[in-house]
Length: 457
Ligand SMILES: *Cc1c(COP(=O)(O)O)cnc(C)c1O
Image 1 (cartoon, rainbow, N blue to C red):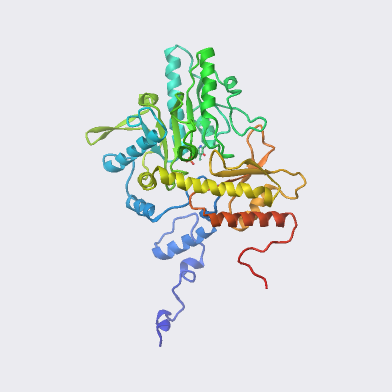
Image 2: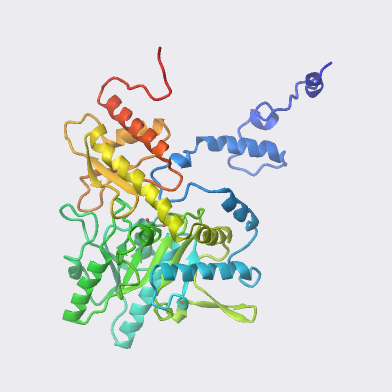
């Protein structure tokens, strides 16, 4: 008979992923199966399960890249078997990493950008650990030289990302967090000196505070430390955690002095996989000068007869993200990065404009002057829903928007934060605002608004 008959053998072993043997039982969860299986079937079933993950393109909660182009995929594929740590086996990947370091040192105005030192890392968390360790070592050297104790190092910061809590605990450093006061969303210069003393290894300023997207005022913080030095002789360095802002400020706020233009800034980290636009798995840390990274922390690897310094917590690491970062810096150039981030900032401004119209919202950050982000709270106690309810509602349409309390001492303020990144079109932004408005209407018990595309005749 026909071909369908031939493909359907008698005996009921019809060949289809969702009818076949593998699909009739649950996939193994706790034990590696004894036998092998058809790779395409397994692939289909595994990718099927991933449908339950959120849709990365609608994830307005993450700082990380969710957009990629064909060329990045091509380079990632090309590099899939290259190990970043094997500098002698993959010398061109190592060379490309170095080029990125010097390009970023230049972008961040290092005085000798072509000669300074830095490296790629798995993410900003690792970059912050390395920067923190360098500062701890430098502080200890200074203390030992003066014959003073080195057992109680501390680090002063505002509302930092969790990686600094980790750094403090893993490497035995006291974390002194300056609490938020009044309407403040970050650490300011006012009280800074009160938290610093002879055991302060550094002040960490954040460019793009995780909670709100604002920048801490690096130049003003440095001035407060200059003043402290004038009064007490204490010379406290600054590290800038520019995980997100390091790839925004040079393009959107080029005149803002947050980087090595401020002499007190000794090191900077930024996540390539955030606004650097690279795929997940790369960040950067750059020191102002080679002398700011203590020699004892550098491991020297023989490199084709030359000398390749390495400083890292990881050993093996993929090279593709670094190669993609280089591609992206070349492909977009400064103008391209500026235009991409300007488009994101425009969308953030649009949302900020619409928020007071669509609901009882008060803006805490309107997307102007720092990251392409918006952050707001409910400004009316009589509203019959919380931001957590609104997050749930947005999730029904696939949008991921987090709600959470501000850090100490403003834990009573619950906020919602939206990050706009490359890949969020103007149309998608409009659809998001429509969904936000619909969510507010439903939660306040109003009539359910009809969505574009749904026509009830
Ligand atoms: C995201 C972030 C980090 C951690 O960066 P990863 O690249 O995710 O490891 C550290 N600090 C700040 C300010 C961040 O925004």
